[in-house]
Length: 259
Ligand code: ADP
Ligand code: MG
Image 1 (cartoon, rainbow, N blue to C red):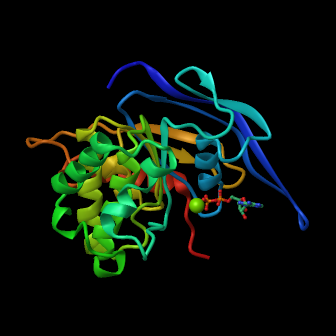
Image 2 (cartoon, helix red, strand yellow):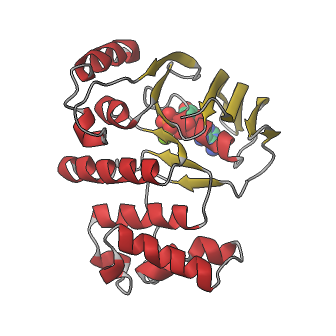
């Protein structure tokens, strides 16, 4: 990790206006993200996490404040950002390879070299044998990997991941999170991920950003430092002696009451 800031979120607020009235989703949210860092955002349900990612991506414009990417103010969507949504959004009528290539097609960057790179990503991540299959023939975990490879194929510098594992059952989620966390580190990506799972957050993050309840602002930021004899991956992280301490602290901060 470096001290180079790639994302700067500066005092953003977001007020949605609808026919039913106004909803203040975010209020004075600020934090920075450094190059190569994985930031995981946790916060109560409905507090404004997806809204925060959408403003960073440029899909929605904050009511006030600004987001800088590599020092430039975000104004509309940006090719250096890859956005992976909660659902995998694979096209059922396209083969796995053609799903992976769609971002390149849209950006008019589909040629021999980029296609080879996409095929190589499928190979590295164990999906080469499935490239002519259709999404319905794959497991949930494999589909999620395809969605990530599709996002990586256009070579974004920054990845935004909105609850990428929430559609998976617990066992699958553990192994897919382990793979995807390792892929992000291997590809040296800067990533901002949202999850509602505290353990998942600690296992993947370099820093965990805890948000307040709506309207979201930063409640606290935890730098995750784990003592491990083996290389850190999302799975091995869970064995670290500090893990439980982070869990208890963040749990208390989230203040989740069963009512
Ligand atoms: P989270 O991802 O943390 O669950 P969201 O960012 O999706 O929360 O939503 C935050 C608040 O903003 C919620 O009260 C939600 O109903 C509202 N909201 C989200 N998107 C819209 C929208 N497009 N129009 C109006 N209100 C919205
Ligand atoms: Mg959400």
